[in-house]
Image 1 (tube, rainbow, N blue to C red):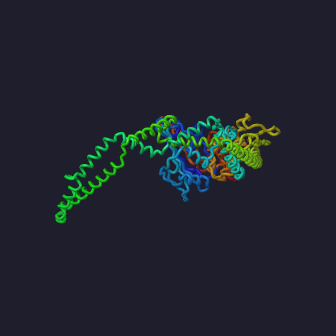
Image 2: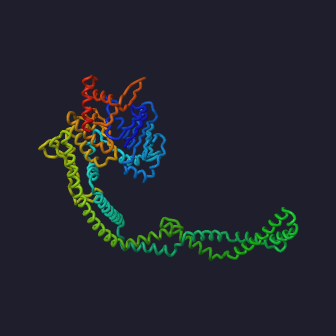
Image 3: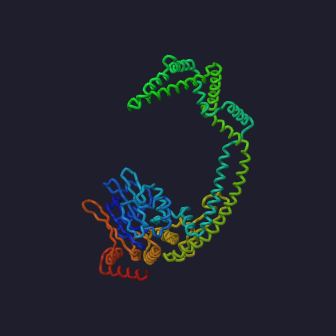
Length: 569
């Protein structure tokens, strides 16, 4: 349930706050007062496309906020929990729900065209806001009938009302299996069979690589060894001269340092600095000895033979040639080899895999057709129920003898899809005795609005958790039909919450609450204000809606209408 709506610097609104209750709320006011702007603002909060032109003139940004109570909306509560957005951290609005199950939405649009959105104080994407918005509010606009002609809306209406979730899930699984196998076959088709000559070439290249390729780390060691051998004499000379210094009989570094350390042995216990010197000299002598041993080991391992250098150069030259041939580099030739071997393996098993996948595709297609047929039967039953419900509502809405029908046609030869094999179409006859025809071909705007209202009421009757918003869907009607629309909206709101922007007094009197929108101008600025009307204020507003002027007669008529509506509630 929408409990609070705040609008700042949006369109002609500078600062507006509206508190809402459950039940049916009528939003009334003069033409152009800004009633539909409230619906537009709510739509933006729920993820509609932002437009910087909607920012109030002279302002840098527009800010929209709303609070929803979710005590009865399990789907929205679960969505927030799964998205880790169920913790309220936004201080813009103060939650006043006793059970704490609230959701705070906020959206800011700037004059440079940027837009940001938050759910419970956490920045989110517009796509996330749209997902949540579909669980919070349904907005039915003046051109709702145009949207209802889309196939997606017909499927949503029928499947949303039908109690056949298992059939929908079975179709989804069957389609997923078929689609996955179809994609595997498509991918396999890109791998054309190899000719004998192509296969021989791949084998030759693989054998050539297998004879020469070495691991990347081994190649790195070969490079190091080659570098060392290419500078062999210089390296050996430097190693030998260093070793001579360390092991010279006259002034070998290690023995000299050890001799100095021994001289300080006795004094080390008497002074801290002498002890430190003794320790450093001893460690230096040990290090010199270790260095001597390492140099001797290195000299013993160095092979300066010309044959070894020649072999290394031949091996590296061969690896570089192979790398150029395969457009790679020596350390990665192992990966090239694996790709060649894999391609050879695939070539041998290509036809076998194709036959296996084709058999699987046939089996998955059969499972899909079976699931689609079962879903078709479930949809036909649901279509009969929804069609009758809408037809009944049409009688109430002044279209006696009118008929509505959702036609469900099975098309088993079409390519599998997530929707199944059904073609759905809304058919209607607004006049008794006339054959049904496509909804989109009806000419009367008033009939379309009423049929749209009937469809939406029938479709939303099972989901009281979402707030229903009707923006002048009663346009073009009057008299008893207007009374019927009011009672119909009253019935919808009895299950949760409904808001209706209306110019009809017959509709407004059926509301549990009435909010008046008033536009005023002062200091060359236009402002929009709202007021929750008390009993007497409602009488005056209904009287204005009936005749424009406030007289004792119009007030009496308004009072009578309100009393009558209250009695019938």
